[in-house]
Image (cartoon, rainbow, N blue to C red; front, side):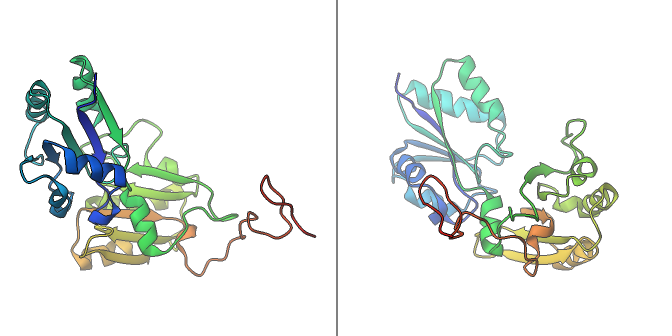
Length: 256
């Protein structure tokens, strides 16, 4: 049975950050369902002129799947566009489960996460030798709970680079949890609002002053919080050995 349904990571915002494969499917699809509150509408400029386009921000799961079921019955190709990469807070598992219950084949096309768009805008590397070799992707507990042991306070004990999604509206609680978990008050923080969009805002601060500065900007959502020493542009960690002249690996013999 040929695949008719595609979950596509539409990237962080900039339409040019769509993958080639994702764009190709969008150009051919009969039906487009896209998360209009998070995806730049210009992505829909790649669609066929006769494609059916649905905005999903006001739709329920049953309404979304009904559109998909009807299109599948008519032999149409459906592109379900999710912001960033679908695997990170994409809320697609429940959609895929319904398709599986009905025996409908689907494929997932990865996309560029806002995490990586934010790091690119900040011109930083999230994993620096002797500074941080671990990136933890998480969120603050709010209306959506987090599993026991995954509170920000618990994760802070690792002193790794934290990428905190969907939490800017609770910035005071975020900071309190991180401080109580062990991060020093001078720990570097970056807040990136709408990474890769034309109205992108980048803020560099510390845990001590980030709350006040975020409130001054007036942003409450669609922003990623990054925390950790790797974000300090003045911090000089060890260089990777990969390109050192005396480091040997499978493709090059080191020179003394």
